[in-house]
Length: 101
Image 1: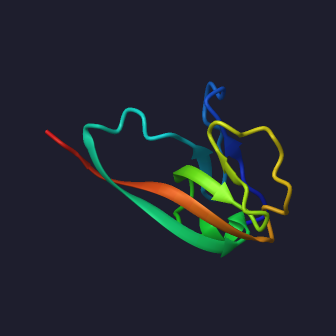
Image 2: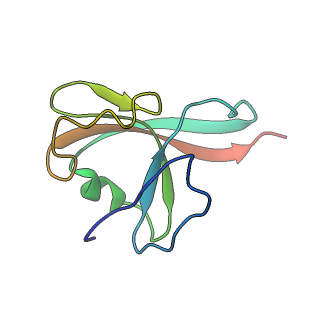
């Protein structure tokens, strides 16, 4: 994976992109779904995204870098303060299981 595309709620359309990508989300609106919150550590975002198929968009709750500052949907745009492509990062993400009926 040579690069990744960071998506946000201001995107009007999802661009074609090889590989997977991610978007910061909150837990709002998930009351009707069963889901798991997964926490994983990786050396860079590419290592994390390589676990998903092409064109998959991962719902990320937070990314914490070596400085232990948590970045989430409320803090996006404030700068990372570390190398997101190489440093050890901890990622909390949402895995949807199914919608409750």
